[in-house]
Length: 322
Image (cartoon, rainbow, N blue to C red; front, side, top):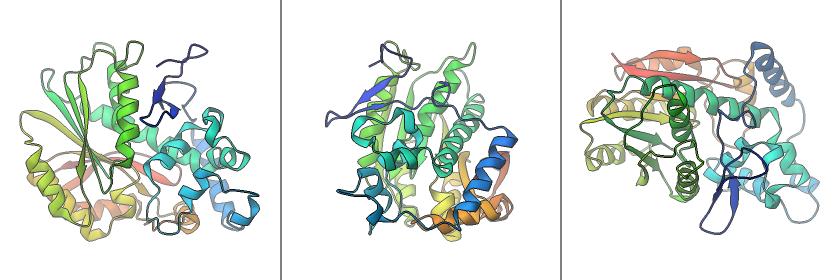
């Protein structure tokens, strides 16, 4: 549904929660990517290493839900809802997440870096999708996808191009759990409604059980989806290339190549001071590979970096098979 007070579309989840739909083409969500802005954000992230990490005792009373999700003792990854909330921005947080500490988290340099990452991966995906034959259906494989918000924003950008017609779209969310897709489906439904930017597009979203540490799950997914006669594009924003081992990266890319030389857009933590600072401050096991190391790694699976955009703590790229 739309917000009559502005241009933000809202999605309603199965539990009644209502969240703004992140649309990187909307000025409300767009973040400045100028070199000066990137430099300021990098300097802030590097400086944060010398400051003490957020302490739970600093939050009186019950811990806010976003903080609980970010510092969950058993969590190995930032879950889909928490990642999505950080991409909404402090001024757009719904009431149940609008505490002082959650606003600080959502306006932090790290959160802004995530929002820039989303913008750039979505833009790279849209560029790749322009190569699709006009009559071909699209299949988007969101690897470690969570809510698949990068795939949905790529479609928004693509549809916004003058003269671009988008045929049927299938979004497959490959992830270890299905919690993110509940939000992803709600966002997709809102985007396809009467006033949404994807109105008129026949789009579906499906959860596919997957772990990049078990490449056979990707092989099964590619086989079960019966890929053929479609233009297929994969993405992994803040997932495989930031968390996965070298072995996992090569194994997954090899399967994508065997399935039809499927291109993939993604993000990689920079191997500079900013990337190292981001990895050091994160409660999750991030790997600061950098584009140069990534390029050497993906060549073992028959891929090359065909396009890249410089971000804040991560750089975003498009891989194509040689």
